[in-house]
Image (cartoon, rainbow, N blue to C red):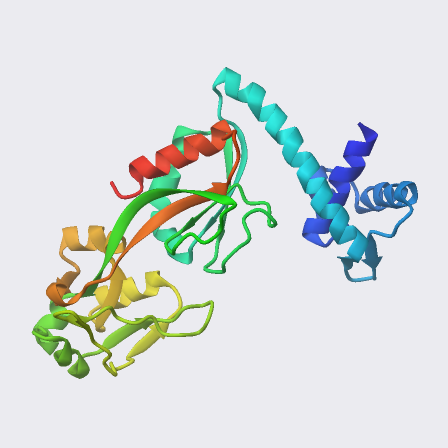
Length: 294
């Protein structure tokens, strides 16, 4: 048991890059964490961390040892979950990576938390392509194609893009009839945080994709400000349909040029392939598939 406690202290310190943060997570002092890791290093005969007054970093041996420890704790958790599964009680921490646009999925996520109060949901919002296994996530939600054979995927629902503006803006600036009309409008753009590129508006005439040099009235790297600016009558924005359903229902936003928009996408839940799906993960996957786009 003391060995497992030492391994746990090491993993917490390695992931936080801080003895102090590890101590806070474990409910002990930073010096206790340091002593535990020192005993572990003495027992192994290797140095696991480079230490300085401001930070700790893993040595090459420490990095290799961390991967081993993660596998050990994964096996321990799997054993615990097998017994939990027999009792049918989803519980425990669930780490999920969500795209930044996932903030717009909060109604479904909040409903899940109310339905499963014994599951501790830890959400990481980023558009970075995370390594699900190496970074210790239970699952990720993404809209791109699946290219990792180590992962299992389940579709959560499809979405389409819409060009949306407020009725007040369209009354003032006029209703665009063709994509070329957009050249005379205020256009609100989304920039990808991962590569700095503007997201292309998926315009098409017939079977031909259109590339227009649209005005850049505003550029932001998250979706929520675009919705706010469009509602405020500042221009036209290209937005996923699920993100503006409430605004369309209330009439604060209306779509334009629907027949010229061709792109659609699919949100998927991805998780590490395993013969055993934990109760907490199964509960999350099933719930999100049933409620995300309802």
